[in-house]
Length: 192
Image (cartoon, rainbow, N blue to C red; front, side):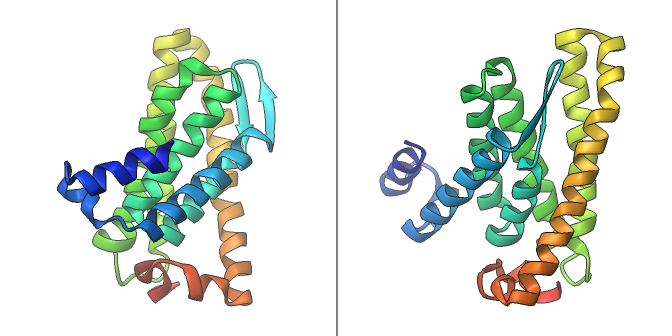
């Protein structure tokens, strides 16, 4: 369904920014959204008010593979579908926007803020992760109150940190196999 809506936007020319997406781009976005969904929905550790998962690692990898904007679409769709299917409907909308922004922040560091730095993706992932922690904490304050949100924040910090570490391991493995250099977006591939 996501592909149909996105493709119709391109074909109808309703949004100038969407015209840059080709069928190949839509396919890659859809595949990464599916991988993010799988890593979020199936590889999770339930907790009292949600769950920890490996989806954030796939989000960071999607930004490296697709770039910021395309990775943001894949991240938002894959993560929010996992919330919807997983029974956490109240988190679908906040997740959509938070994961979208996480990917955009990381992509901005890779392509615009620090395009020539060697570990620009890592700085972007940390900054995006900090945004994610603050944004989810703000939503948790609205949902559960200040005290409970503060109690839940260390778990989010651990999940975000673990995702960045897991992504670093994946990037190393993908680089050594040659996969990263073949398929990563050109800005990420240049200096990793």
